[in-house]
Length: 501
Image 1 (cartoon, one colour):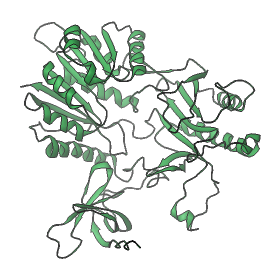
Image 2 (cartoon, one colour; image 1 turned 90 degrees about the vertical axis):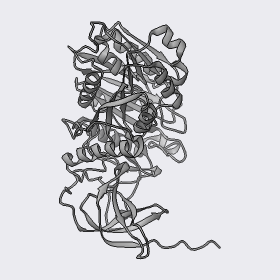
Image 3 (cartoon, one colour; image 1 turned 30 degrees about the vertical axis):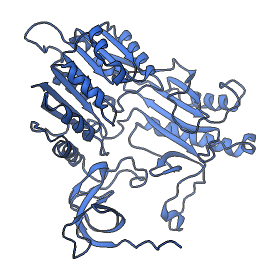
Image 4 (cartoon, one colour; image 1 turned 135 degrees about the vertical axis):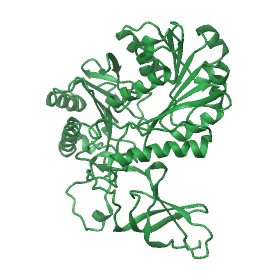
């Protein structure tokens, strides 16, 4: 018989003093009188200045995790969250914090990363550049169909009545892969997203109740069993008024959606009910995971892509394309990249009229590369995903940009001396890696390549700081600018300029 787990304590009148990584708040307290030092406790959905009772859920040697059981005195900065699902869905963990304070906390994340990890000399970090729109800013949302609706503790204890059945369309609950929180409205996307999602949900319910298929298969996907008719839906509006919807089916007997099938009728109903949809596409995904990166996207209606504008440039976006999720703020971010690189309109990077050679590593669909190309001699973009490279080439072509070249492959394999010898040594290198940062071999190759400036864009200040520490002997940080792409979340984008010492 195993040992009985030791009950962890509940603490009274604890003051929350700050904000930590992953959007959690922190408190520091001695759990026992004999403790020499206070322990750090990480607490979700707290605000600095809250006085709370909290329950310890997990304890390690150097830290603990807990949750608020009672609010004794709310922080002076605490505000009421706008969304009914706040605290459940896990998406907008800072809705209870005013936006001006969110920007301060995001700046502090960058400061902390450079002080704790990089430990290099940096200039004063300015305030985070805020987003003009703090609601309705997302140009891409994905929702999951499931026959296993998540229920709150209040509902399970009978304290709250809910008319919904088991079938649901919404967001995965953090830490529970097979449970989905039903969503009726989400403030992160324009109202068209809510209307389409709710319509699709109602239509799916009708088919679940009336279709003969129910004898064979669920209309709403069974995530545990990996079977079902409807799996996910992605909605992508643009600032230009174009709108893409991508439906992902699970079990279909056909290789394509054809007239006379239930899938065809479902998509036709969606198309006719929403003339705003300029392109309607679908995927048949029978894999275990939801990713469509390796799946064929098929067109039901429209050209199969949408176009977004940034400044005077157009960018074509397909179902699998990456594009910054906050369209308007993306222009703010890229303007800052161009400014740090000396590639803004009217600027020159040299005392001569010679335009620089620019390398754009992790170029994605070539958004940054095309954005700065007019002020460069040429831009060389490298990206791991071949589909993204194809999109980058298309984006250059539709904008009449002729001085870009794009290459697909693993960065540490593509970027070598032979490649640089062939395409020219860069004056400026722009890097925008994934959250994990750059491979150490890539950092070493950048140092060998010896560009005059490196502009490092990152969605993770911690890995960015780690990489910059590796370059400190040769490069000095001369400018830093946090940019908020995701209001009401803890995520922050950060732009750093490094120059040869």
